[in-house]
Image 1 (cartoon, helix red, strand yellow):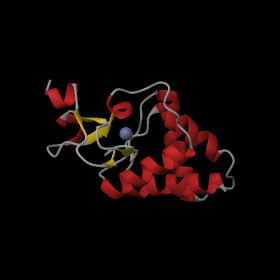
Image 2: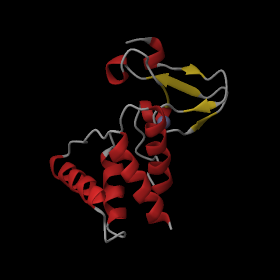
Image 3: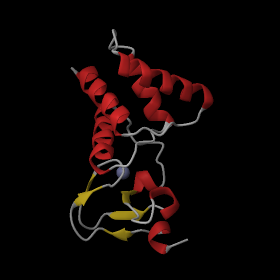
Image 4: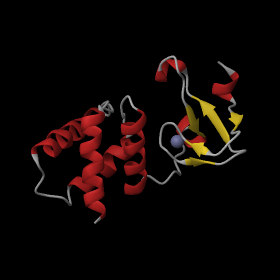
Length: 137
Ligand SMILES: [Zn+2]
């Protein structure tokens, strides 16, 4: 395994995680995702994205920030099971849902049954972000 994938490096300047959009400060450890997960350009991510952290708080703000990051930087958003559970719960407070939201909700409910995270393009990710912003109101 490439050392920057296994051990990471210290960030040389302030930035943000390439996956979840969390702010990264100079000197914090960042990691490169394996290229098979991201394509040839690689992607620098924060520690909890590289080595999933069960203590990480998955809340509406987290999902919104990650969704916006995925829309801006692409190519897609593959929510974790914890994120899917949160999004489905939040949709429950939003009824009535529009047609796009119903389609996304069905995908996510199916994912809860199969335990397979779906990969969403920008359009479906945008539906999620819009709904999560509404859920925060
Ligand atoms: Zn991250």
